[in-house]
Each structure stands twice: as structure tokens, then as C-alpha cells.
Amino acid sequence: MHIYIVRMDHPDGTGWNIFVREHVIYLKGLIEQGKLLASGPLKNTPLRAGFLIFRAETRDEVQSMISADPFAREGLIAKLEIHEWDPLFGLLDRYSSHNTISELQDLIG
Image (cartoon, rainbow, N blue to C red; front, side, top):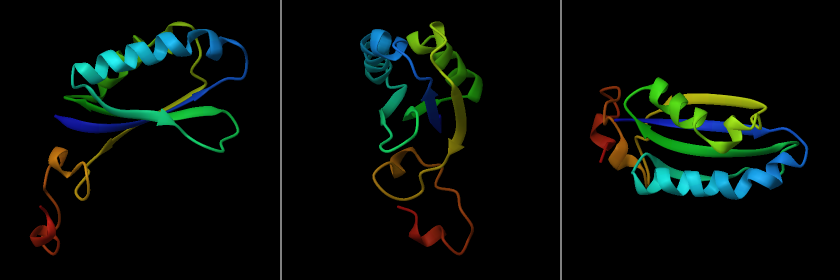
């Protein structure tokens, strides 16, 4: 499994308010399935935006989960960025590849 960090920005308008509850219920389902580790809003951004941390085999799997989100269905994603990430250190290090340069290998937990 790989870790992906997703930034999702939303357009202005009333649609966000209408579908946010369904969006959160969908995300909670992904958390229960072990596919989503965390999600939450970004603070002090010009548009509504949030980060999501997914566990998935491929980027395409992440894209499929995002495509099934009510916000995607309703056209409420203005910008989307998906990045594969390797959390080598910290609270999420159990999801890490534990692969790094030899000079740091002794620091990997």
C-alpha cells in the first residue's frame, strides 16, 4: 500500500453547503474501510479547501475514490492535486516504505 496526499479545492457557491454532509459521510465510510487515514479543511485559504490522506495501491485507485465523492459527482471540485507521499518520520511512519538514503537509514523506526 502507498500513501497519497490529496488537496481538494472547492468553488464558491451554495453547492458546497448542500453536499458537505454527504461528502463527510462518504469520507467516514472510506475511513471505516481503512482507505482514508485523515481528512480536514485547510485554514485561511482563498477558496474552501482540504487535505485528504489516502492508503491505496495506485494513484488510479485514489482517483476512483475521489470520482465517487459527492463533491466530484456534483462538479464541486475546482482544483485537485494528488501526490504520492512516504511518511518516513512521525505519527504515520508505520505506513512508510522505510526506504531512504543510507545516511538516514539508522534513523528510520
